Amino acid sequence: MKPSLASIGLADPSAAPAGPPARSLSRRAWLQAAGAAGLAATGAVPSAWAQGQPGAAGWPAKPVTLVVPFPAGGGTDAFARPLAAQFSKSTGKSLIIDNRGGAGGTVGASYAAKAAGDGYTLFMGGTHHAIAPAMYPRLDYDIERDFIPLALLASVPQVVVVNPRVVKATTMAQFLDYLRANPGKLNYASAGSGSAHHLAGELFKLQTGTFITHIPYRGAGPALQDLIGGNVDMMFDGLGSSAAHIKAGRIRALMVAGGHRNPAFPDVPCAAEVGLRDYNVTTWYGLWAPKGTPADMQARIVGEVRKLGAADEIKTAWAANGAEFGSLTQPQYAAFVSAEVKRWAQVVKASGATLE
Image (cartoon, rainbow, N blue to C red):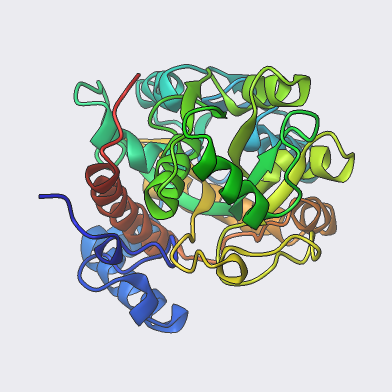
């Protein structure tokens, strides 16, 4: 029996690790719960930091590789590249973006999981990688066992975007009327089967009683290019990758997920305003290190990430994309990832989403 939508915890991606939906917890309460769970899970990490291990003090002594598991031009890239530029400015060393797309972000994750835990290969993933365990039964890595969560980098709401030349509706009400009158006529692009784009689309269909054909791509970048070109009709995208195209008029935003409008796009209504109060899907991006990375190296990297997030250049880039820089501690982020894996497993089961 599929769980009800009310049991999934759609109101906030930082849902409680277990139990009632996120709507029943304040953010302060969730942070307290996540912090407690994370500290319990990581136990001896603070004392290990205090002991210190060689190598971290001089980090980075050479360029650092950041594995981005999607092609260039997608949502992950929209945050990775400004981060890389600021990293170079701050440390004097390069942060090299290594785009390795495929299979909903799992190809790049598999590659990064096998890297040395020396602080010189990092992995930038996100929502997709919390979804993957429920979608891909034979992954050759485990996001919780084979990686060390370092920091939540950005969170952005999902946005429903259409090609204005193909879809004539200018409001969500008009769009829903069209979808219900023409089941299966429109299609939507995603970054791949099992990606956040895919699951956001399946939830939308579930909650609106509509049918839209899913067209998986190898990343959000190629999917967006085909949306702009009119080869696909619409997309459920993270605002970070769609923002510039919305502002340029290449695609039209009909709705942002959640209960409030996004400051970067004040004219775009939110889901609650158009009657979809439970459609609260956020795309988040985070930073991991391969397992085996020493505790003092983790602390050194996390400290640099906090420094980067405080820079005016990063604040400006994130605001332009309607994003917030993560404020969770490392233990809280570990608990958040674990909670997301459980949450999205429920979403996959409720929606019946499968690989295509």
